[in-house]
Length: 249
Ligand SMILES: [Zn+2]
Image (cartoon, rainbow, N blue to C red; front, side, top):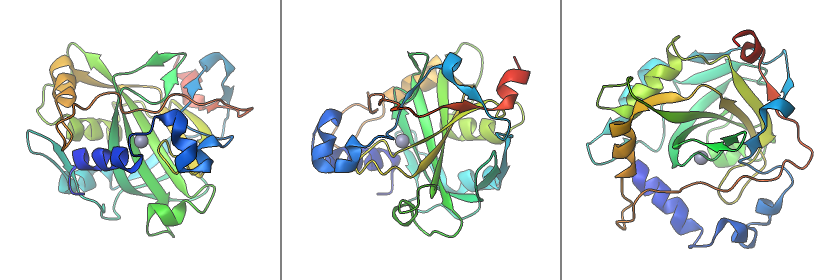
């Protein structure tokens, strides 16, 4: 699975064409109480002062080595070098980046709003060597989610993903404002082992760049559209927001 498009394709193949509401047939975990994604209702989210800005280490160098936009698709090597790390933000430990992928049509929604795209950067605790290994630990995996939004002005550069990842580690992107909740993988087996960090500030891409993503095709020629799981019930879970969220308003 050398290319991003193949990765997504493989995910779809794995669920054998089953609709998300049938996933419980694939794995009972998909019927669990702490599933993702969710709709984040901002007025119901709770301030958590422990949610300090995340610290990013090695983000700058890592992505250039592993992501290549060939003009037709975006290649992501299966194993990232263990160079990109996150800590802080009330995460229990340091986590290392293992994988990233995109959803066309955001998975999380904010007050019911769906963004055109959402990127997930999947991290595991340093002690683990793979995502499956980390899924045995309820806080084994930390996923950072960034939304993409269409912008008239920004991001003239050709490589939208690299540009976007540049934005993430760049101070100009406000990464102090985020939501936090405990959830699951959004594809089977839907393991409930994920600390979700959903950043409020979308990454801005031009209409042309977003359109370029929509032109991506799976290996079977299917267009890349609507690769997201519907939002799941909160079942009593609380969603917290970071202090930066408030002080920046
Ligand atoms: Zn995802």
